[in-house]
Image: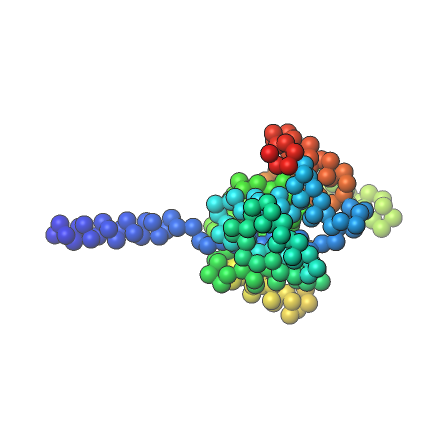
Length: 257
């Protein structure tokens, strides 16, 4: 009887550990844009923010995140070697699985990135490299929500009053901003479901601006996680200034020290 109780206790303990075990999760960093709005010859993902390239800041957050097991970076074909070299230089190669070439659109690049992750990854977290102020804490909070609900996204409340206008720029109505959020990244999903939904959208030639819209199109609820407005996308020279000011406010010095 005692032996049976000990065996039952052992089995129960193993089951509890198994239930607590985190699903294997991959990070997909999208860095294939040209950054034309930045106005320079260097793509924005390679521009320095307090001495550290925009891309590396995003990769570093995923590399340091305990919820991420591997990383795939999607970039332009001609930048693959440069990205690999930068990851080695800044010591963020431990989780790096592959650096691959992107597609003609962000949607296609994200799909290629997810397909390049290991098949044993149950979840993927897709992130725009230009959101270089992302933190490991933000990544954790979004993927945990995805574990519970299959699909989750970083977002933040809109502070400005929003107006709907006609084609001539005349105000038609004021929209209740209490029901509005600005979508950000990371956006985390069940990997197999994402591949199926993205493939379906490609077959139907459905074009979307973010990965949440793929799930919305098939009626899947995407849960939001308020990660704050500091997780903004670096798009213009003014954004670089704002990003550096934000990092200094966090206590960071030049070169990420």
